[in-house]
Amino acid sequence: MTSSAVPGVVAVVLVTAATLGIGVWALRFSRTTSDFMVASRTVGPRLNASAIGGEYLSAASFLGIAGLVLVNGTEMFWYPVGWTAGYLVLLVLVAAPLRRSGAYTLSDFAEARLGSTRVRSLCTLIVVLIGWLYLLPQFQGAGITLQSTLGAPRWAGEVVVPVIVLLNVLAGGMRSITFVQAFQYWLKLTALLLPLMVLLLVWVGDGAPHPVDVVGSGQQPELWALPLAGSDAQGVYLTYSLIVATFLGTMGLPHVVVRFYTNPDGRAARRTTLAVLGLLGLFYLLPPVYGALGRIYADALVASGRSDVLVLELPRLMVPGLLGEVLTALVTAGAFAAFLSTSSGLAIAVAGVLGQDVTGRAFGRRLSGVAAFRAGCVVAVLVPCLLALSTPSVGVARAVGLAFAVAASTFCPLIVLGIWWRGLTARGALAGLVVGGAGSGIAVLWTLTTEPGTGWGSTLLEQPAAWSVPAAFLTMVVVSRATRSRVPADVHRFMVRLHTPEQVQLDRG
Amino acid sequence: MSEQPPPRVRVTGPSRRPTRRTARPRRSQIDEETRLGEIYLRSLLREQLRLAGLALLVLAVGLGGLPLLFWLVPDLAATRVAGLPLAWLLIGVAAYPFLVGVGWWYVRAAERNEDDFTDLVETVDRP
Image (cartoon, rainbow over all chains, first blue to last red; front, side, top):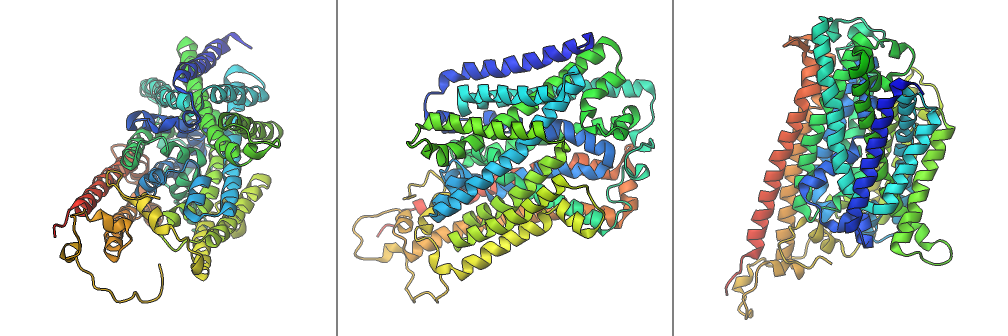
């Protein structure tokens, strides 16, 4: 380790200490199972919105977007826009009814709506798979971050982050995580905004050319600033399929959905979501600017295939000396916060369903609520940690994009039809989940294990959402119509619960 | 969601029933799952779904139309406004206030729908 790594080490240690410190401080409030899982539903919209923002802005947002923009240009703006627009779709279709359903996990929602334990089990399986697919790039991102800034071997970050996440979640559960994640949103925003202001001053002072006019070495350099210019129908398909996956996938992400149960009521859930839209929009203005500046100062990263570390390297490349090291330390701190917060949220969500559905019944006897949650948490973190150590690095933002595609193809149809259509049956839901899950799952496996091709077949598998989401919706509707005699008898009561404001005194079942 | 034509029933306000002794708010119709209660609930669902559909339509046209527009008219994307290409300004900057604006409008309208529903079903029909 060289002396230039010292500020980076200090930053990582400080973020870790602050995370664990806030977690321990908030532990005073965590006593019951309900505290651990949903913070006893007492978190106000402002705190909750910061926590959701802190949880949602993962390594893909903090590091991945800037790298993608550097290499592929303005077409990649659809990643951050889609990740924000997903919350608008969630707001208008899902937020208040999902909170009012009173369920904690997606599995709970499915069982309460359809009264089927088979649907519940399938939902649990999909939640766990999406959670692992999402955790894998977080841990690998931690690996390349410590490698880039501290010169540590890649496995170091891939082990350190899971361990800290486990310590934090095991100690405090959801209640303490809410405070930690709210803190981490503002840390991430600061860690990206302050260095960027300095870098923009340096860029103006240099009299350097406009990023748009630089001939970089990324794909189609001359077309960098023009989305879809010169692409064929496949390029248009990829963009629209990405839009479908991100717009509709957000509502099906396990760690996002769990957050909605911490709102006191349906209206608070809506207002929280609106605040989240504002916080995300503020943050997502920044990463593309890093990508643009990278075209001038960090073009070599494209050729070496290390574009994911652009945000971490740019301060050092543009500002020499101590100031550059301090700014690097700041973005390292932000990146570390990103891994910790998203991983913690995912660990809680996956541990929640594992604790309820799997470990709760293991070992011959039922574990108590908190013990089952903790056992689930270990499994939730250990598996993707081992995967990260044993597989080559996948592009951070693209891997997360695939998790969105799976969520959009499975849980989006289930939640939207479950909330707005009384005709949904358990068999229809099962068939739709299988079709959407298998279609998008095969596409994800293919994309992660093979080199991208150029034909239509390869394009369709690279971004499956545009065909797998309609297929899942269609299957659910057709099979539900064919089994319409099996519509749950209590659907009226459930609709009352989902859609009527809490202040009206009604029998909600 | 049954497909049989609904049985013919007379839809009248509860206030006209001479047998009712105590005045009760209309919401009791929903709990009793009467035809009238069903109409109250469906009216709320229809209003909220219509509102959601409208918001999604604005989103689909406002943002979803951009890739197609830039693909069909590349010159438009290249137009510089204040030194930045129009594509950057629209997708990279203006998209976010647009999303917050649509969300703000939706939240207000959805809460108004709920308030109207509350007023409707809390009304006590006196005999």
